[in-house]
Image 1 (cartoon, protein in one colour):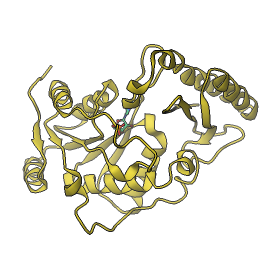
Image 2 (tube, rainbow, N blue to C red):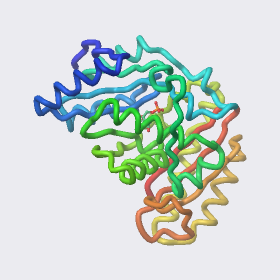
Image 3 (cartoon, rainbow, N blue to C red):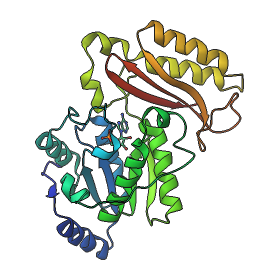
Image 4 (tube, helix red, strand yellow):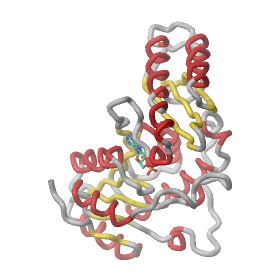
Length: 282
Ligand code: AMP
């Protein structure tokens, strides 16, 4: 395993000079955007980046504009030194770590809104979230100018929103999804899992269990309402507060009553103070 510390950039001009030199040399550049607090899910994206490109840039930026006023921006875990070490061991070439003032200098006034895809699922529960994500990701793509950018299927709605924005805005980059990395008991890895108490951590894998059952029940084209109601009841009995549990068209994210094409079962639920999301292909 390579284990050099990646070159760290906090200055946009310096980052652009390095990436431009790579591109001029014909090297394919892959971007992995993150908010830090890296875990094996993020490192799977870096590993995929190294497979498909010559140069891997990981960005670490806890983006204030995608957090709501009552969300966890101020307590979101930050540990840059550990993250840089992990990126080095994973073989990333560069870490782009802009300051908030670099991303949003005084007078910053633009937001990107993606309609449709943001209206359901997490959208109503996190007003402004996807606009914050679409805006920051568009900026990251323009700053780094990668050939490919990788996003986890763990955040499936986010992946679809970014694909839509990139297509609508004619951004010259390929967006690819990477399968979710899970703990052995099925819990999707997430930086927020560290908020869970031991009791909550023991209950958390129920989320994946319920998604698995619904996906299996929906697969043959049977009505999904029954399995969804049963799944919601099981989650609430286990102590979750469910925000949504739905089977949706994998492209439009519109809820479906029966599965007829590519579909996804998606969930968001609070366990204590921690909001968890997950999804599975049907
Ligand atoms: P975050 O730092 O949470 O914004 O995540 C950065 C990227 O890593 C996003 O594209 C996420 O979808 C992805 N990611 C987060 N958790 C996982 C996971 N368990 N498996 C795969 N990708 C993940």
